[in-house]
Image (cartoon, rainbow, N blue to C red):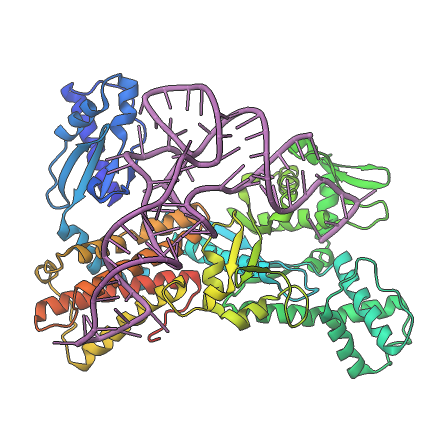
Length: 554
RNA sequence: GCCCCCGUAGCUCAACUGGAUAGAGCAACAGACUUCUAAUCUGUAGGUUGCAGGUUCGAGUCCUGCCGGGGGUGCCA
């Protein structure tokens, strides 16, 4: 659609130049946009304004010249106007607008797909929580975001893989083991100092209690090192399973669970580090191995191997990203919490040091989530007195509302999550508003079946009966899906999907009020059932990308 | 100190990356149920886009400097 009009404009400009009514100046890329105001038509371009400054002639004059030379394409366009300072506004023919319904009918769930991604292979790595504790609410936001982004990019023609990186190696694991060890020995009645930076959460005590119940004091004879290792090996897989369970419950499925240990086991870390050393990108200083990240835009060089011989998290991360690149992804997207923001230049520098294009790595930094209940911020769980876990939130407000709320805002602004609102089953709650539109459509279709209404595909002439404003608005909005998908994919901004869903739902509800679907007029009924089915399909598609269910009845 | 993000209606946010009269939802106020789901709809009101400059045909958007909020600035992850 867009391309067709752009093509017409290009031809018109060429024609105007050859007729000499347009000065022969270079013309920038033609941009078409959907005007905010209805009076400005269905599409508009500012090309005359851009040309005007180069040609030093009034923009309106340029615009007139372009319109003058435009073919009158009556099939698609009914009106071309010059407006305001020199915009050219296009109005689509009603028949063309309604045709979207045939397209939806034909393509089904493929309607809205775009090929803008060109089949490029993209990996989205997200959540990647340390398996040392339950997921918290912030992880929920990244889960919803990463999953929806992967969905929408898939729709936009990318080949997307979802990956979870498991930090099952190093100091976090050690801390986890020592924390449990301490709680366990406490139960056994042995003296053991709780690690200074250990995990203080109640869940650690629960784990220790369970171990005590299962094993009694049978483990207490082990020396500290053995015991900690034993506890790590026993408990981190369980924690990981529980994390997987929570994510699954949210409807998030990963293609790959990538283990940090595996990197070490395969020798990837050593190999990567010696490679960097050989290339002269890493050097030894004061007993530690440093990567020359400062020569690639980082503030200073970073340590890969500490002077105590232990590799840093950064070391395995460099190896990990090398592995990602070697797997042949064209683009790798990492979703990190905003507190990792200082880590971005370091990682990008790491990419350069390895010899990869740092623009193949994109990092989305997500801002934090604040929960509100009764207008008051909530930080702690009433039940446990600790940070609210994702599972608790899912218990309270459900998966649909959680996912929808997590996705409502741009990832780079703070999210205020109103628990009371998310639970409300009323139109103030956007999840219910959108889902209700879908349920209402299902109800209409059930009724249609009940009264034996003819729901066969209408002819184009019958579809012409959809001529009122609510009907046309609805069709126009349906036609925007592909644009929305492309925007969300290219800007990595799936939150715009929620806005689109709400707009579509609002137009449907307005249509519902003004246009009775099942009536005595068989042709009109056919046309309207067809329209309503189109809306249903698009709502399903959008809710599907958001990971929110589309209920048949509510 | 330096770096990054944010600041738009009472509240939560948009604004298609520089376009036309800055838009939605909620809350407020006034209306609409012989109806395919009123879990809905219609209307009214609400603004010096944090402040001050600058760039140009045109700025919420770009540049500079302030102010306020958040995050970062480890041989932590």
